[in-house]
Image (cartoon, rainbow, N blue to C red; front, side, top):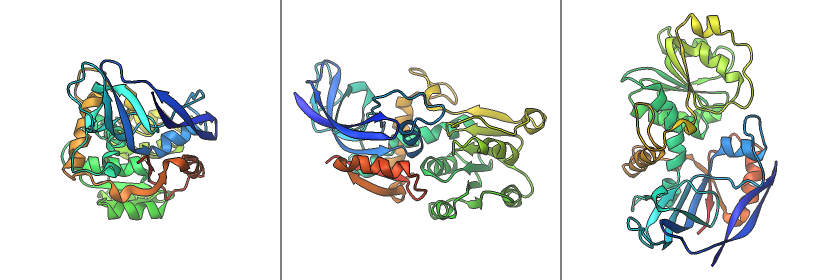
Length: 329
């Protein structure tokens, strides 16, 4: 029986590494050895600290972006072989025992450091897909963190024009510009007027709210064009205040759309609602074809033994932190 190491959140704000045992894979499952896992900064921080709207219970085994290789296959597994590089939504651990059908083969020429972004891309894709973008519609992405910048690039690929990044942090906006934002707007007083100047007096056709800050919802409604769409991609950590839905939304004909990944169907696709597996395939292909290049988003890399230090970094909310990788091999 193989023994591995995995991260565990024992209580709010307390994380450790623990040893665990893995049996040989039963029929239909595969045993994986990790190469890289990727921290999802907003969501993992929220569950680590038991922030509002998480409903976290402990012990908690965090993580859901895993790049590794197959080291054993159970009976009836024919699509994968020992040695295959794979991607799956497994936690931060040196090994994982998962259904073979939950894995995708990784592109052979794509480094694990980049391939591991597949799942956060799929999460960012929820906002773009739910927006049902038409070619040439203007898009403003609120938040230039990891999910916000991935959303920006996906909105460009979906036909958004221009796609504008908005954030309260000038350093993050510099990165958004370097990665191809059509324009950037520093948030705060005067940001609405600045956005409208870029859009010839109008609001944005689509607002993608990627911060999860409750106060940002009121701003998102004000920044949208009449009859526009406001997409809640970031999970709000609390109740929004100072919103009067009659003048702010109802009279203006706005659409307010939730884009949590849990709304994805399990088996059948429909417009705006694709299965997780199909979206993972799309993200794998975008990475393989270099249409999305995540390497500039990697800001920190920790060896697995230093996982508690990585979460201490997360707890302190370093706004310069984007992609935080864990090296397992």
